[in-house]
Length: 136
Image (cartoon, rainbow, N blue to C red; front, side):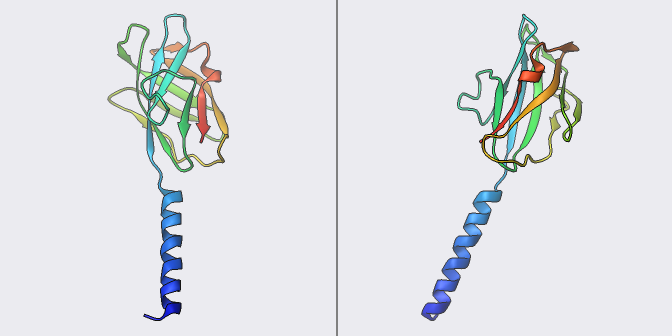
């Protein structure tokens, strides 16, 4: 192989690695949690402390979110409904047996998408509009 061919092959290889790293999307698992005071939180698998309830779920460009279930204030599994403002809209009701998944998120690091509403076990979350997703 000539020096020119080697450099071209190396450049193509580097480009393919860069594209693969950028487009490597994941599914972020989220569990919704209802608190006794009527507020809610969420646990996201990409958050620094994935088992700690938080206001925002961290996602990367191209990630989908799979809402895997919800628990009520007593810790019992229950149904949930997460609604986004347009263009995302309503994902539909889900539960542990029927999780719901978003389409891949597009955006830039730091972009925030707040929910329009969150309902857990037929009880609206008082703070549903303050919960959401942050692109990292």
